[in-house]
Length: 92
Image 1 (tube, rainbow, N blue to C red):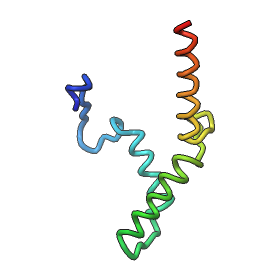
Image 2: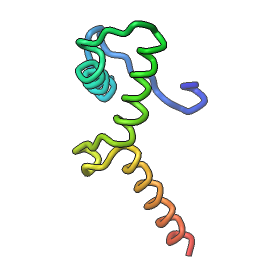
Image 3: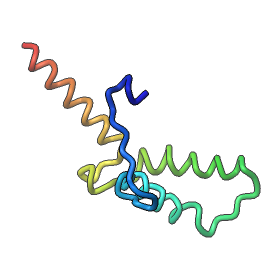
């Protein structure tokens, strides 16, 4: 997949989170809000709680300063709406 997309793999030394800072930040938030201090009776229950947090709260409701205080979903919608608008203007 890397060659197909002309991507360059980035690997740093073990224990260096800077290559994955966004992912590390997400998992820190997830663990702090959901995982720590939680006891799940079943794997199905854990999956359900994690799905609810990520797909409903984190992606659709939670606002973030890096997104101009929009949720990730609202930020993405705004981005694509602006992209469509600039495409129309560019072709005229």
